[in-house]
Image (tube, rainbow, N blue to C red):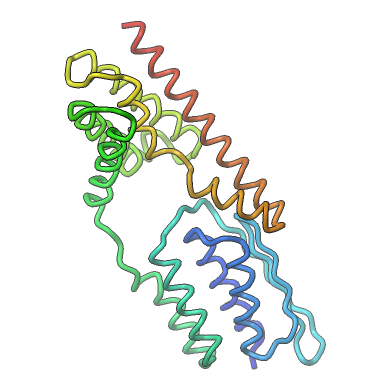
Length: 253
């Protein structure tokens, strides 16, 4: 068996799981089970949010290690579920390495992607649905819908304008959201600046990252948990700074 190819397949699967938003334990366990299904008794797997390291020892006693760095990523539940299903199939009935590579490479292409207009509509619908939870009326929900659409447009189409840095992008979107909410209320379209602003900012809150951070800390994955917690704290700081700047600019005028 070509252990180099097998190790590459396992690492690629781990990276695909990580980039789709999987927890650390899921990444490590999936890669470990895949390698064990192909007859490797004690593979070593270590993962943090931006890196996967896998080490195996061949039956001849030759150690092989792969390290793969992962760039910025988010959450894709559909791809995550398909990766899990593919890993289970590989573990239950290991195919040939050629077939495994073919199925793994085809997985991202076969995963359906929502059109950008649907994603943008989701950015608008979420704040509109949050608004009643914060005590807002119909007018506040409409303003939140408009603010969510603008923030979504910045996130989806404004990469060249606001850059790819997550902290700066979140701060700019928060400033735009708070300033737009203030202007809409002043123009008489909404009733409460606080309600509209908070509703729009909810689309920027790192809820999944913070939840995973707490889960990983409690599970003993301290490094990963602290990394995710730090990321969540920085994102929350960017939201606070951006919204304060937006309201300050609106107050000047």
